[in-house]
Amino acid sequence: MPFLFTRIVIYGIFATGALLFLSIMMGVGFLLLKLFGDSSGAFLIVMLIAFGTVYGELKFGERYVMYMVKVGHISVVVELLKNGQIPDGKGQIAYGKKQVKKHFGSANLASFCRQYSRSCCCLTNTTLNVENG
Image (cartoon, rainbow, N blue to C red):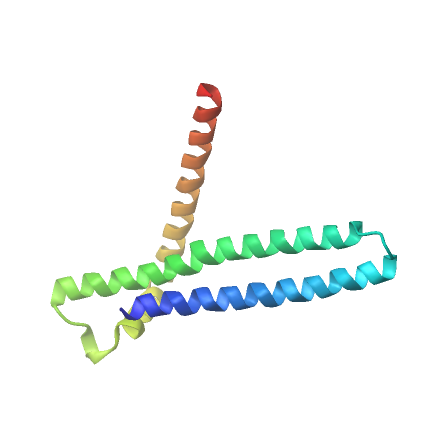
């Protein structure tokens, strides 16, 4: 259950950051709108860049940061299945965080491999759908 709350908090942080960034970019867009008058092209370009940036940031956060949380959760589950308890009387989050830090290199590589294989599968499916279309 602690990892569920951790995920909710992380998604809340990303949502708050996205709203803050979009608010700032909207302010910049309205400033450009005032400077250039009725020409709304600059505002449109700023908003498209802002939405693209936020979308990319959220996708990276969802895939990378949440993968690291998942690695911590898996390490806790494995420890509980193997030994029946978490060592040193630590909480699940603390133990998972310690394990992710300890094995950060391999967890980072696993995250990269997962993303790479996912991209290859999506590309293959897209290619097959276009050819069979």
